[in-house]
Length: 324
Length: 273
Ligand SMILES: Nc1ncnc2c1ncn2[C@@H]1O[C@H](COP(=O)(O)OP(=O)(O)OP(=O)(O)O)[C@@H](O)[C@H]1O
Ligand SMILES: [Mg+2]
Image 1: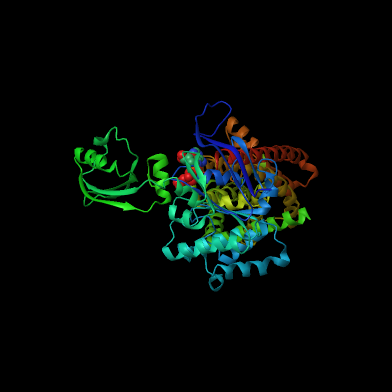
Image 2 (image 1 turned 90 degrees about the horizontal axis):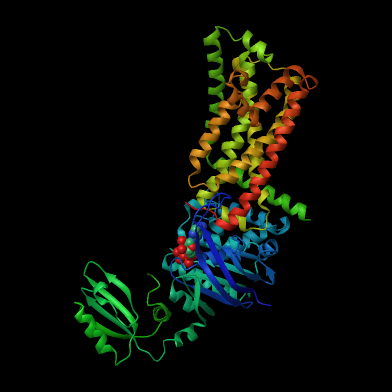
């Protein structure tokens, strides 16, 4: 049995609340995705803003009804067995305003212990264990509003472990964190999988994070999975081709019509007028690329060979960067 | 087993709501002050207009000659009413604004437990307020309430509460899906205030407004409570029967609205602000 089994999953959002007498338009956020996650696997959904990552997580955690397709969590159907699923999973949602800021960390966990049906006899012990695990025990009675962003996220993770879930869903778990906190969170997630044998599905738009952390990655764009493999497997897609970064001044996209290569803008230094382009370009093509760029009025500052990363896979598949 | 689990969840929601309420320290103060202004004003308007506290017109219409006692009883009902309208609806909308609803809705706890837990705190608060008001009204304004009659009124108040909770649930269910819930809640509050029959008998309202007042649970509760306090249960059968009807209706409506809102939440997703 798989921990997560997703088949042809679709979700459309109405633009307005659908009422019997009102015709509404629908936006397709997830357009038929399929994947399977094994027990004990750390699986990543990597994609740019609006790709449909959060939507997918909300469907799998039974917060949203899918418009089509099926999904099973631990063998339970998300439509029919929502409550059975909820008992066995947990999630860290996107953003920082998800816990009760006017309560202390301890009171927050107490609340979640009760609504997750944790027996009274285990409650205090479990909360203490979790707060110690995420390093918040000393600050357990402080109001969450006085916590730093990183501390809030650690508390959100503690909350997500309150029912000792078999499957954990983490939506952009390091978004907006400082470097230190992000490292703590990443190492913590890896340990959950390695030591406690939990299954984790996380979303991210940081390719380095996905590459470092995940056993397998599905790259999702415009509601579709465009590639799915291990990080090494994905990078093989760009192996053999050379990744080149070109820094230019006075770059203009408009003047580059009918440009046959997939180059993406990875950095723009507006102040100095410098643009960094990146893509897979072979040795034979390189002079032609440079020529076309110069013709468009750009001035070449440097051309550099780079090691391929997941971002290059994304650029190759879409012609855009993850940040676009 | 399942029932005790759900009760613990209910207790959890109620404790959480209560803690959050307490964290807004000034709320309780402003809530209680509102009551004093209300009753003080009732007294002053009454005396200002008639030169005395007793009104023969009121006596004729309602059986109460002392306007102040009339208003205090009405205020109690209104206090309950607003507790459910504003207090309850805002407590849910606040969570929506804050972004905290999602985690509660993702837990195995039933969603109705979440709503009822919030309601429970509101009922408790209403009783706390009453316990503060009644002795103070008696001391400061010399309100005459016969204790036996008063306690007879409480079951009737609770009966009306069922309808008020229904209306609160309906409002909460709807409000979760409005782009801008503030004005909607304000209008509902105004309606509750004007049509509760707390300050004046609804008989003096224009006919259409009277009908509207009759169609909401507040005025029927006020009337039934007053009648029972003054004349006992047996003489109030009509009022009580109507209250049973309207409370059942709103309980049903509340339940349907809650069901609808649960379904919507899973189609549209919760709005965040
Ligand atoms: N409640 C909603 N109502 C209408 N449209 C929505 C709703 N939630 C999301 N969408 C739309 O669905 C698409 C996918 O959104 P989603 O939040 O799933 O993307 P995401 O991959 O999580 O993006 P991000 O990286 O910005 O978090 C977007 O176009 C978004 O505008
Ligand atoms: Mg998202």
